[in-house]
Amino acid sequence: MWESVAGPVVSMVAAATLIAPTPTPTPGPPVDATPVLTTAPFGALPGQQVTHTITISGTAALTAAVITLTTTADLDSITARAEPGRCTVSARTVVCELGDVRLAAGGTAPRVTITGRISPGEPRGALVRNRVTLTAAQFAGGSAQVASNAYLIPGADPTILESPGQTEAAVTIVPPHRRSMAAPAVAVLVAGAIAVGALLLARRRRRPGGT
Image (cartoon, one colour):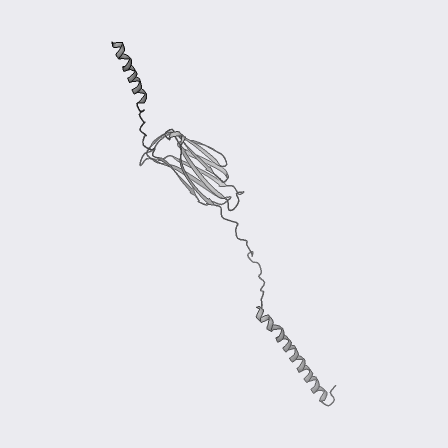
C-alpha cells in the first residue's frame, strides 16, 4: 500500500519542483561613482599646452578602478599623474590604474592630472574630442561611466595685409559718373587755352613793328 501511494507523491513533488518559478535576484543599488573631466584651456590650439584633470564624484567603494582618457588630437610631451595609482601614456590614450578606492562625501577624491601639448600638425577646423571612462569591478557587465567634452580647432588666421611700418600708397578712384564728365571738362580747358593763345598772337601782330 505504501508503495502504491509513494509513487504518485514523488511524481507530484517532482512536477512541483519543475514548475516552481526561479527566484529573481533583487538588483543592488546603482554604483554612486561618476568621472568628472575638466580641460584647461578649453579649445587649445595646435602647439598649445593643455591640462586634463579627472576626479571621481560619489560615495561608492570601488575595486580595481581604472580611468582611461582618449583624445582625437595627438599630444606631445605627455605627463600623467594619478593620486592614487599609476599611468601609462601614448599620443592619444592615457590609462591610469587606481586600484581600490573609497569615495566619501567630504573626503579627498581620486585625481588624475594629464598634461601635454597639442601637436602642431593638427589641422585647423578639426574636431577635438576628449573622452574619459571609469571602470571597476562594481559595474555590472563590464559597463563604464563616461564623461567627455569636444570643440573645433578654430579656422586659419586672418591674412596679414600690411606689415608694421609699410608705406601706404594712396589711390584715388573716380566714380563712373564723374569719369564721364572728366573728358569734356578737359577738352573745354584745352580749347580755351588755344583760343587765348591765338588772341594774344593776333594782338602782337597788329602792333607796329610786331613780328
